Length: 216
Image 1 (cartoon, rainbow, N blue to C red):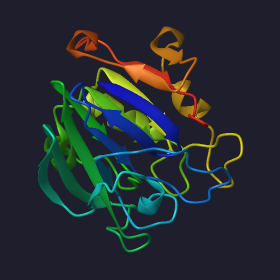
Image 2: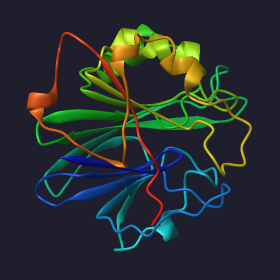
Image 3: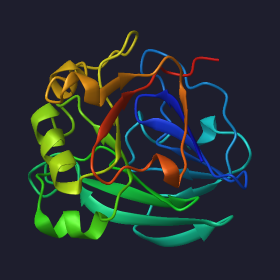
Image 4: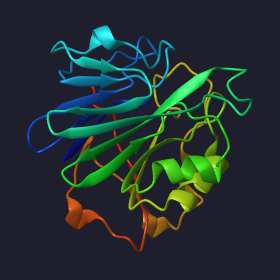
């Protein structure tokens, strides 16, 4: 399967069969969503920087409710969580999405804002690839993100929802998060795309991969 980072919390996930899912397409956040076509779009919540469904071409199916789904050989599970640590009273609910592609379990945490509870972790496991917000302010911060990583123990962690060039949101850069790992555990990818198979899963270690934003 392939993971292409489109910026902010938006990824294009493509199975070897060709089925493509786009997560949390954004509106105007200081830069524009690149042209992308998909079979499905997942929306973690209805804020403008996560719900630009019309920006995705291909007449995709939209998943924005809790439940279990299947599309083109891809299993999709949406788990309810909260956008804040006040049971949703501050910023509402958030959907966490899990995808099974080519034998890999990928988890996109959306704009997760709640603390790391055993009940939530149990609903998410197992996870091979974790897409996790690390910028704080509107989501969990670097310290809480590290706790999620330690509890979930994925093979690969891809940070998202952090301050990048052009982004006009008051959130942190990923440095506070990546500095909690050993230098050999962090890879700054020279590009926006990562190709993975089951052979890339190492149950004994975690690799943090920072990806460049696709800009075309």
